[in-house]
Amino acid sequence: MNLQDKKYTVVGLGMEGGSYALAIKEKINPVKIYGIDIDKDTLKKAVNFGIDTQKPKKDILHDTDVLILAVYPKIAIDFLKENQKFLKSGCIVTDVCSVKSFVIDEMQCFLRDDLDYIAGHPMAGNQYSGFDNADINIFKDKNYIFVPQTKNKQENLEFMKSLALAIGFKTTSDIDKDVHDKKIAYASHMMHFISVCVTNCPAFESSLDNFAGGSFKDLTRISNLNPYLWSETFFLNKKFLLEEVKEFRKNIDFLLDSLKDDDYKAVFDFLEKSRKRKGGI
Image 1 (cartoon, rainbow, N blue to C red):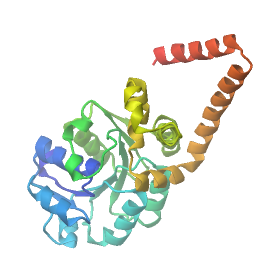
Image 2 (cartoon, rainbow, N blue to C red; image 1 turned 135 degrees about the horizontal axis):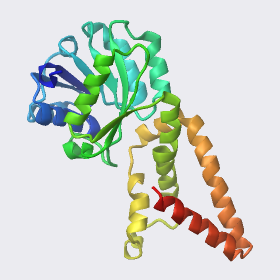
Image 3 (cartoon, rainbow, N blue to C red; image 1 turned 135 degrees about the vertical axis):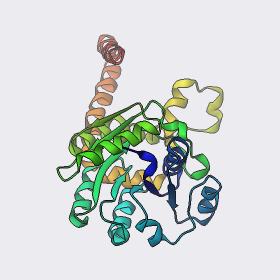
């Protein structure tokens, strides 16, 4: 399985898509790496890194073997719906969206039978956006999640896993779409939910720099997020996010009630339980 012989196109050259394209260029050096983006300045910058962005979109897509949709979920769906007519038969299509059930269900409604959509979620990124913040090192030692469907060709799935490892990921894993969305709701989406809630508290102000330690910076770092992407993400994974936040709120209520009741043992036991659980992971 020769990764170099394929022609790749990344749609959306922001931080993650730009990192993906640059990693393919540097780690694989394929016969061709294309980039598509709505921002003209981004397209000009990408050319300087060996990414071809100057051909007409339909010509790029017709020449593509592997299409990587690195845009918001709804944009990814709309882009493929409008442009799949330009793709050649046998093209592998993948995405980087953090919500899988919605995207997979929508894709299956219109996807051509001769295209192979392999749902993916690279577990890498940061709080920044834009091509200027692209960094191939964000993939190093991370996990790349795939959500295989019955229609997927096994050789294409294996190809995508080889690609993931080649650009720096340490591991790959397969998971059901609903299991993915539930786990991500807790491990990622709720963490961003909590972070923005903390940042929006009245006490948050610049003078806290003299009082804030590592815990404050760690907790609030991801609140410097892209509101367009994350508002869409919250709503698309609303079912599982609400379930996890409901459980989280139970813990807040328990701890608040214990403090109000001066129940030292309850507070201590709650903290000790947390310490033991975290120590086991």
